[in-house]
Each structure stands twice: as structure tokens, then as C-alpha cells.
Image (tube, rainbow, N blue to C red; front, side, top):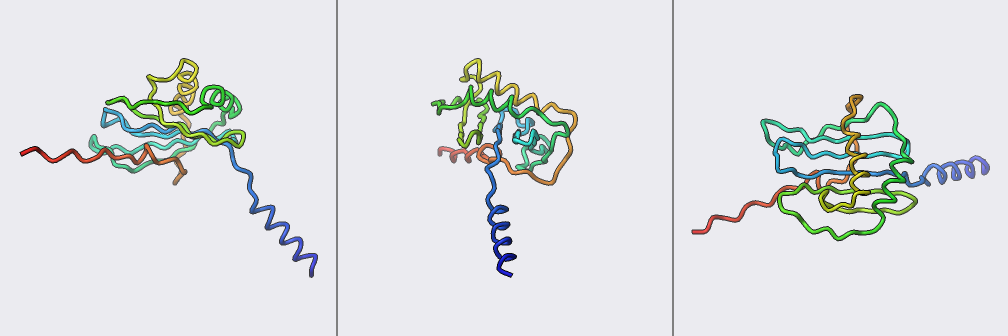
Length: 167
């Protein structure tokens, strides 16, 4: 009986001790064009791609999302290498009025990185890495799924209410 208990404890310990899964995530915030949805793209270390896309109704943002999984696999290691070489240090970006913010979040080689940026302020190497991620949105082989977790800072951001009129 003691052996069974020991085996169960070992099994429980092993099953609860998960290795952190590596991923690269790009989220895209509000555009000046109200019919352009906010989106997210996530590549996992299982060579899987997930996409979130905001539902637009009657030319208005709804804050509701549809989630998709790309049916074909990608080479995660290629994206990983490109992102690590391009985004590994915190960069000071200043806000650009009327420009669309983007955010990259990754967990690679046990390092977590998170950065909001504006495309126009990227280096050439960084733009190539981001464009490669953005191309994944154009996949024709999307399977709708019920939900997938994405960082929500930009996906749920709402513009502040305008100030009251001056009287």
C-alpha cells in the first residue's frame, strides 16, 4: 500500500510540474480606421499558430473576439531566432498620435519580454521580424476555436471619454 502511495505522490508531482511553454505573441491595438479589427497572433513551441480577431459590427468595434487556430504548422525555431535577435532589450518608444500601437510578448529561453511599440520606430531587422509574424494572419487554413488566451492590454483598450465641452 505504501508503494502505491509513493507512486501516486511521484505521479502527482511530475504531472503538476509543467515546463513553461515557449511562445511569441504579437497584439495589435486600435487603428484610426474603425473597421480595422484589433488582432493577436501567437506562435507556440508546438509549431502552432493562434489568431484572435475582433468582431466589427456596423462599422464599430465590439470588443468581442473570434479565435482561430491555423491548421498547418510553422517552424517555431525560425520565429524564435528572429525575435530573440531583434527584440531582446527594452526599447524606449514614445507615443505617436494617430499611430497604431503594437505589443510583443514572448517567453523564450526562460526569459519573458514585453514591449509596446510603434512600427515606424522599429529598426529594419525588427520590421522584418514583425512582418513575418503579421504574414501569419493571411493564412487561408483557419479553424475557429472557442477561445485562446492573449494578452489583453491592447486588445481591450478603450479610448478615454472626451472632456466635457467648455461653457
